[in-house]
Length: 249
Image 1: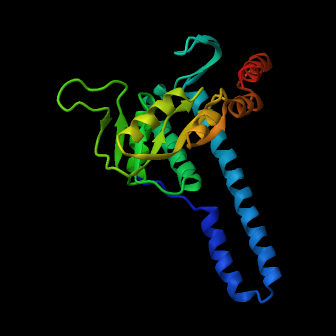
Image 2: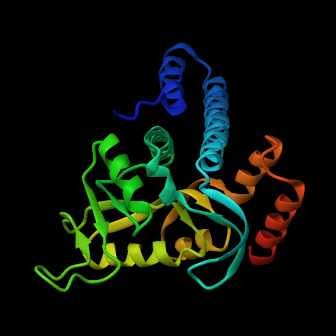
Image 3: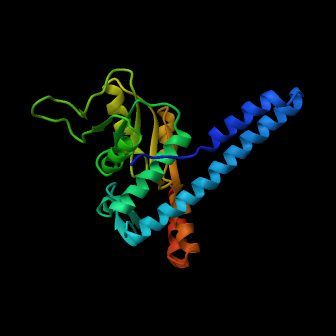
């Protein structure tokens, strides 16, 4: 099933083409142009907020977000844990999440040739997103393959091709950055990384320094705000996560 969206930007482009032919005053045309652009931005912000709400509820329904005391791969303790590896076990939810990824990509990412999955949790999502967007898929191995062809990139990557990275979430950004570097070393160009959740632990700043834009559907504070308002998270758990994020932001 393909990802089909109606982009606010496309609607605005149509309106602007009409304005150019019907508005004689240059100043009035300019004001209408600016107004239309701001209207488009506001529309996407509203759509994105709705998509974030849908995604947060899916995380809750599939037990992909938990609250308590957890040890992260970095060795740090965390009062919450997001395990999006559970999502593909629910086909309808998996498809919906990937549809959301598609909409995010179509609105925020301008130009790319291929989709790559960040190992390992990002690979299932990147695979389906690439299929829906009708883009070739590749992925990066965590370790160099030591048999057959010795390589870190699986799939066909030609020098100069623009690669969009897809991951489930980002924390500090280290994993995403390693994938960026691996693709670049293989001759690819990486300008954008798309994730569902930003844990707000410095990933955006780290990737920005490497010349990469981070596109997150939602920040973790936005996700828990949604759950709190829906009565799915206690105020105590909410406050603990908020304080945790503030201390590490």
